[in-house]
Length: 184
Image (cartoon, rainbow, N blue to C red; front, side, top):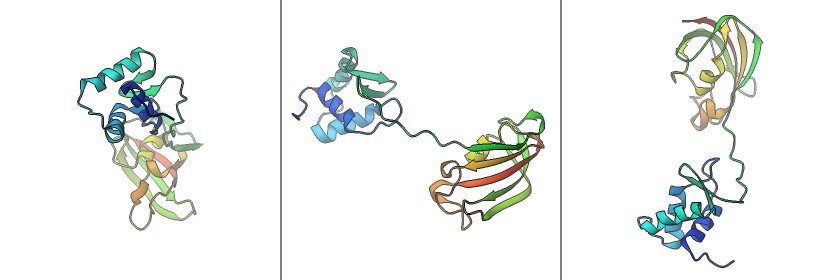
């Protein structure tokens, strides 16, 4: 394959050599960094900015925000965001817990091997305030008082790469049985 000659061709080449940074394509910053390192293109030159505009105007590039893709190329699948698995064991009564509510729960947390790493008969926190792992902020929302729920919290929404002390190893998926005791 012949090396790209025009600046627009170089942008197309740069896009095709990099994984997309989002579902919208490759970020302008990543493309410019690639152009600078591989083709010694000066990112401060007005010609670089003009080449992006020309590529979009001519229908060669598709722009969404600050990301670009080559028209006609298939956008690869971007991994879906991690989600909490929710299984309602018993529905409670009254209003649903929502972000900003102070909730009290009874819970037991287990690792994949079934070992219990934590439990409490009464634990209070503000839902959606980041006081607990993201998996709890997502998984307890919508529960009603008296409700009981199984939560599967993928590592990314739990303690991630760092784990938590000796009880929760790095990259551990977590399983919780949670009962909502009160909403304030």
